Image (cartoon, rainbow, N blue to C red; front, side, top):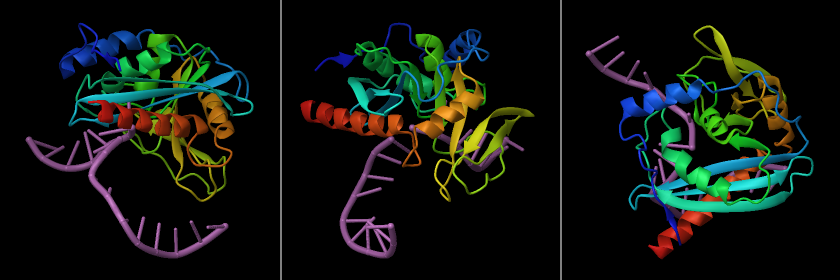
Length: 231
DNA sequence: GCGACAG
DNA sequence: ATCTTGTCGC
């Protein structure tokens, strides 16, 4: 098994990572509309860690956006490239996720990430980072709140409330299942918030989390387990 | 200054 | 993220 090495020149400290983040942020596109919900392809990406063994496993699962059937899967295993620092999560996941995406033959279409895009302290979370680096439209669907305030959305599926930070709307708390904790949706790159939420609802016909992230989550866990066995 | 804080 | 059994419910 090939272990993805950390790229040469990868940020080694927080200050450098923040500087890189600022530079990439200049290339972020918010105005452009990605594909409509339910059309084309959607790709879920996720990673699993084993800090003890210094391993990260990433998975990319491409789905047909209309039928939600799996079109293709890819994984990659690498070395942990950065410690966990709230706000700098992307520097921990990006190298291995890019390797997994690079192993796909299919066009990924829209990237659905486990985390934030604009709803990030510097308005540039994992989803935006991956979007800018790949040039693909992307959205972030997180399971937990971060640095913003919001009101509880109504209990019906589809109900939502704005995520507000520094007086700006940076995303939405969106109820994907009636009476169940909402997910936190934000724009990653080249997609509007309206459309990001429409995609999220299309991807949650049955569970709170998008089918994309559910597939990617189970796949990267399996990949990590195999990597452990091989080490 | 202190605490909180995606995965 | 990860450490972790059983258990309640559809």
